[in-house]
Image 1 (tube, rainbow, N blue to C red):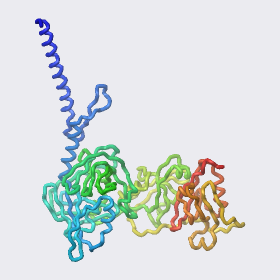
Image 2: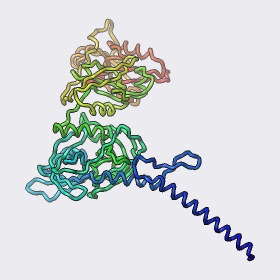
Image 3: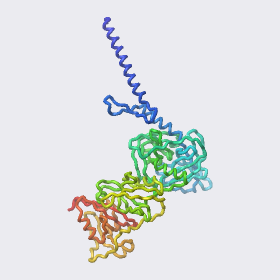
Image 4: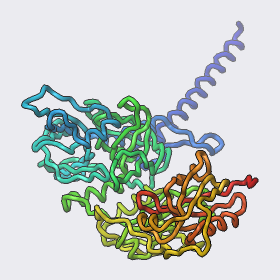
Length: 517
């Protein structure tokens, strides 16, 4: 190789080293420049076109670390001893066993009574020792049967301050001061897809942190609470939650508590990808009441409600599907006093849309008794705002009788005993005097039979129901009903009101089938 070739090779190698150093320097600068030292710093970097932010893995990792470091010191482990009669299981344990599995050990029987040891988690709410947990973690605990282990390994006996079975929340208290306190976020601004951490003590593994995303919001109808006034409006997450996580916090990447973990959906009593948490905005209202009064002063509106589907919206003349349908109004309730009526559709509470029954329950439960709220309703084709003063929830409020039920009217001409409406799959007959007296109605027609898989069957019309209204007009006889049905076109919907065998009224929307032959 001549001198010129050697010189060329050296020059090329030198240029490679220089460009390599420049590239390495650029990559290092990119990573270091976006390292997350503050949770408010943006953790994305732009690609060369200036679009599509690319996640810096170092910054993202720092975000998780920050959230964990802020939260773990505020989370406690709770051990509970509950002595029960031999052979009897507390109702609270039976209800939550199917969600969490047997997270209790039962030692040898002693004198006919069996102590049970349970465990859960909690989060420190105040520096002087108030701790939030689940009701099902501490319910049924013996006196002096609640022990709390802090993250720094200090151990305390705790007393039960108060519980709320309708949200499955509880507050306990330890005699301590200068404790690390959790930061509370705003669960109203959560978005599906947001990163979250679950912190707790699952399966006796203290100070465990798992991560996932917010999988869904406003999840209800799970039967977790299992009470008439139970409030289920959960945050759903795929962060791993297991027995022992109950009462621990769900936190965002700012280290703020946005929920209290309560349950998992599972077939084997262990994590299968779906966990649920109570939103912190509801938790705060409940906890503040328990700390101040020892119980929850729950506000109530006093309505029976159902979701609205497309058929119901058409029957009501609504342009869009939304809101919740008022099926009944409690006697002397805030709703009745304010003028809300059965058949109204509640669209908003204080300008916040509500589209599911649990969303309305949540909005009312977050407010204090004696406060005023503006309820937007849809009625007879128009929207109106009704001011309602909420009151304290009464446990035994009767359902109001329908005061708009038409007066008794005897048809001038005899009607056929049974009339079949084939397009709806329903058979009807007139009411006799004895049935009117027994069922406490002045007029209407009786549902004699419902054809299986028919429209009426699919919409939950049952034999024995009494139809009292159709499209908000009284039904005095079968002719009133058939006239209303015949006046509809294919694809239209009509709204009927029935009184069920249990004595309650409800609205049901029926769609007229498109095949009229």
